[in-house]
Image 1 (cartoon, rainbow, N blue to C red):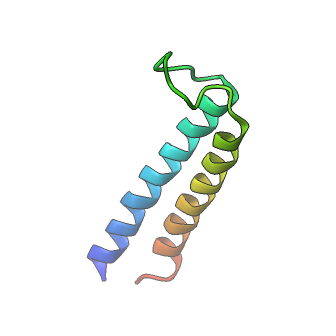
Image 2: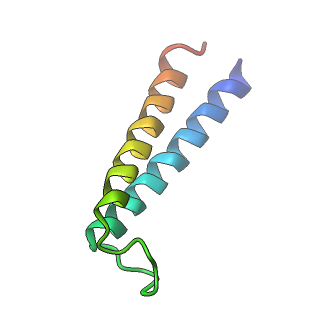
Length: 67
């Protein structure tokens, strides 16, 4: 069960980080790389928020339910 807990925590953290980058690019606050198709695109902000929420839920589940 320890492997599952660590795996969920790592994947949750990565998904949260990816979601935050998507939010930043979609809002135009993180415009790198400059040729990215995601810059200033509202759908990527929404997808990033969803990814970050799922990532945080994975971290919460790993800490709460996996013993």
